[in-house]
Image (tube, rainbow, N blue to C red):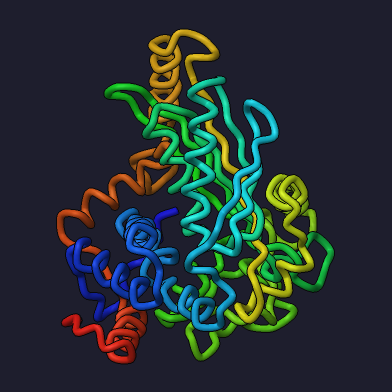
Length: 365
């Protein structure tokens, strides 16, 4: 989801190509193979372009901590085990999650092309960027795309006073056809994403009420500008069950089952690896579905556009003149950021400058 708050004073804009080359060079410096480093850079910069600042260049230190601790395998030997014509399991061998997810979605798409659908679970992986990238990858190939991932020690189940799950994000993307509007849902199943809290803290903004279990304290960042683990986030819907927190907890548990139990990625191992000092043990779930397997494509695309027009034509709430379809705010942000440059906030720029100096990369930032 696009960061809705104003950019902090001192934000600097760079051409997307400059930031992508910087990120690529960082990962090459850590002996990540060229193609993998290019992919990681593309995914992270894609987040910044789409206004998802929490998952772009701001994530660099997250990856660096794990590469430096040796808990990420920069040259993994991934193994794909096909379970049926439409299902399979990828053992990622502790790969960078972005690299593993790309392989998993490619396998899902190959099955979907041949059999109408494809679903792949992933184990022994790690943070995969933002969920929407992988669902969009399938959508741009003409399929319905599904992507989910789990985590550990970030969100408390309803009525719990400690964090067990991650923010367990999910994305579903449905192509709208030629000239139509795509549907692209990308959301955490916690009230917010960890990166959005980190972004707010880096920028000196107050954390909105309801984002965390306030009775357990105030969230803080560590010396690497990564959110500490003492204060759990609330599930989507908030604490307790009065405002629907049990529904967010249910979605988180569903994603844990699909990404963890189906793949064999255990929650206890993921909790142990959450801080970056042990292997991440992250699981993913990727899906691709061929739309023509249901009915005539042109009829479906036409019905989608009629539905969206009905929504757009609804009476607007005071102070608002537009109702957006999921994915439209990100597309608008991407067009603007490609045109005027990717915004890098002062806190993130400071991290980048520190890495530039420590690794003697020679970029002018």
